[in-house]
Image 1 (cartoon, rainbow, N blue to C red):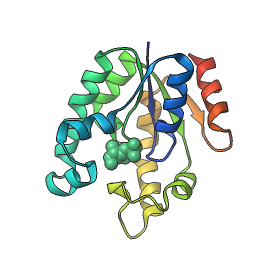
Image 2 (cartoon, rainbow, N blue to C red):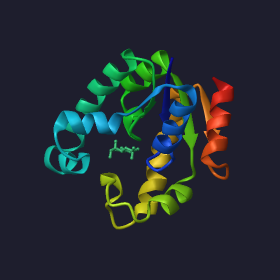
Image 3 (cartoon, rainbow, N blue to C red):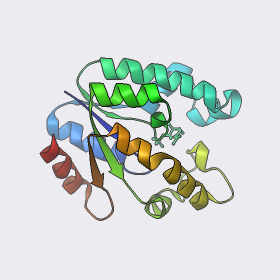
Image 4 (cartoon, rainbow, N blue to C red):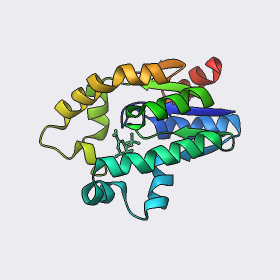
Length: 165
Ligand code: S3P
């Protein structure tokens, strides 16, 4: 069984995904970590040096491989849904949950995080609102079900997801 978490950066994909994997006895894989192993440096550095399109090319290869690979809970980078091939591969090969968070909620969580290249801008909240507007429909199209991350604890979110599988 393969389960994939999609959603904005900071929506809890890794935190929830890791706990869900433990609960289901599956391996947890973070696509960003696999990409970093592949490119041999931090994603932020790669973005600056090679540009976003090159990053998306590597990301597409990794998503293709991981969605064909062993059973796991996969946390996919927030921008994976931008490419139609990724949306199709995730949807057809995994049970996909969209961890839906309002941009304001994500902003509260990520305010002090220096590792998100897309948020290294003068007004990160405006940036998150733009990302949300551009991507919400793509996350919904990719997912089989949506979970609201606002109030529940991580344990409750894991229960909610496990019930839908
Ligand atoms: C990105 C999100 C990041 C990472 C990269 C690009 C995006 O992953 O893949 O910095 O486009 O939203 P997280 O969603 O895990 O932060």
